Image (cartoon, rainbow, N blue to C red; front, side):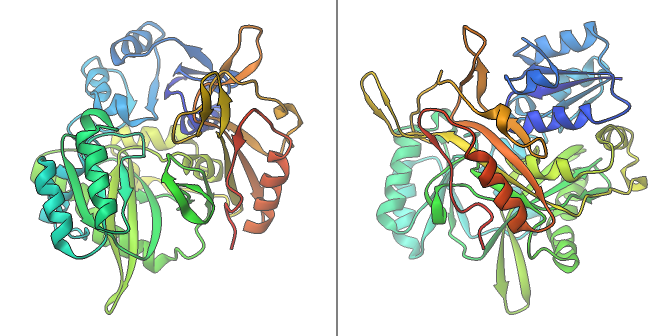
Length: 431
């Protein structure tokens, strides 16, 4: 069969790579891909849902799998389904779970799913009054899509007022800052929890630990992700059951029964696990409608079940008949980003702030073949050399019988790679 993967980041490279492993797949295309993806799939210059649907029809694509949130929120699934083209991902209505943090928090509260105390504002003055009145630290979140960076964690009132200013008035996230969700800052253990679902059955994947902050010791600004590892050190069967019964199942069944939305595809729950007198409570910080990045880079290499089989079970409503198989070994993803570097008019601070692109990347050919390199922001230069095109450039994914073994391998191999301004955290997977 022929498969089309939509996306151009590290997650999408991992998805394309996984489909290439399938004995049922004869050809993988990517729209529009990146330099790394082009080494495992044929990249096509289709950049709108309409262009992608036209390509899928012309090439008689048997399955399309959508990586990022933007095309899902733009209605690519609705378009493909209207043309009879098989595609994995939630519809545009279902995609509101990610594209509107404010509406989602309200819906979750109505469904009885645990969420932090929160309030929604479209007036920055009222938002500032609220953060002065609540008496506890908050997180200020832009309502719309912000590439994983739309949440500003605040230590006090001054921080919160500055966050309101930045999102709602300075519009650092553009139109996504029309409204904000201001919620009580919770303290506990964060967890990225992923599921496959056909709208009726929900199958949990193995979990991953993600690192969002730009700097060591979880300092600095939020990013799209600086690294991850799997399996998670303290996620056991009882906690999985709690998350499924308190969050995942009530959500998927609730939006189907109450909102007439059949959610099919990937469900990503961003949770804060808080110790309470009655036990651990999983509070929903965010919901995403796709695999995470860089969590996908450590989850998919552990998936032994053919991703084609999983996709077909989702499309035909037969997920209940599928038993997922997982490699028990550890995977660790270490992400290298475009850091501080000199430009023509001064210094670039580096990702997630302004960064330099078009910088040659060296050393990848020396990376041990036991590792997988997933590209997030790379392209080909005028002379065919590999260059940087984004803030997150690439991730090295290592394997180990223990987390420490995987960590040692990833850091050893990353030392072989170089580009101007290259930066990566030194504490991914550290105890």
